Length: 478
Image (cartoon, rainbow, N blue to C red; front, side, top):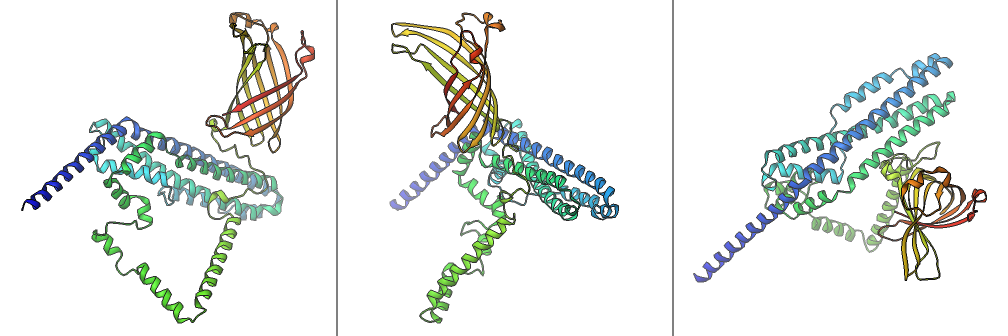
């Protein structure tokens, strides 16, 4: 009897301890969610939904305008051919518009699934969020925006497929009339739209710090894991492992063969085939795997499968075109010093720059440099302003890591104590630079690569006093 009471007491202690831990987790998660998770998800969903809508509308409008121009041009050559080629164009666009009215996401995007299911979990389990009316309203709004994003993603996929089909159709109908330039333009539009869609999907692969933290906290609770197992999009596509005691889960497995039964059947068939059956089975399995790999290669070469496998026709794509403005910015810095006879340098040039990637082979940008004076040595340290420089530059890739570099600079090479003296334009000297540079990858937390530049200042011979014509710079890019 005493032992039984002890067991009951231990079970009660464990039960209340588990409840206490659950309450602590709930408080911790509530604190995280109430400080920005719902807002972060809503902002991301709204931003991407608006961008997708804008790009999709623009892509369709561009294609329609191109088709109108092609039809007008073809009518002047062959009116019957023009009528036949574009007879069903209007109906095609109407069918697409009807299809886009009810778009439900059919592709699986892991982060979309996690974010969307987590919001629905919070709605079904209000103990994990603040009970303030404002928070509940924000949660409903976030769920609505996430559903809108899912719909817009499917619309974009449908539009991408429509653009590909129209491009192929126009190519078949019009290539014999010599519309190479026009068809190439349409191909560019279709390719860049597909790549832009891929860029937006890439954004969804990397959750922000707030999102990642809350999802990690939720994943620690069994309640959320069970909810994901039953209500996520992945669960609707594939039967997730469930609770063995769940009647629905047990019923779903009724009549299915177990792994042991399948293995037993294979072994029985092999044994009946004689002593060489095992080797023959392995050989047939390898042959089947080889044929499957060949089929995959053919699909990829044909442009099937992932949109990443699509290859442009008739032009070399600019991989920077579909990236956002900030992703095309390359920040850099360089620090150079003039040595003295003491321990400290006489001066140090501290420069910063921001380059914009026009394409994969060219970068244009602006920069500035400040020349700081340190004094003569450790016994005579005196910080002073020894000069300023405003810079512009352009880099064009020559081959591999070699670049042709050029630039124009305005330099103030005299010591100054206040900024008023800098307003005298005649005191500034011009520099025209041209040369070569080499980039070297760097494994660093802050810097991505090192840039070594050897430049010739062809305007240095006009300066009084004459400045150094050859300049060597070492820069670092973030």
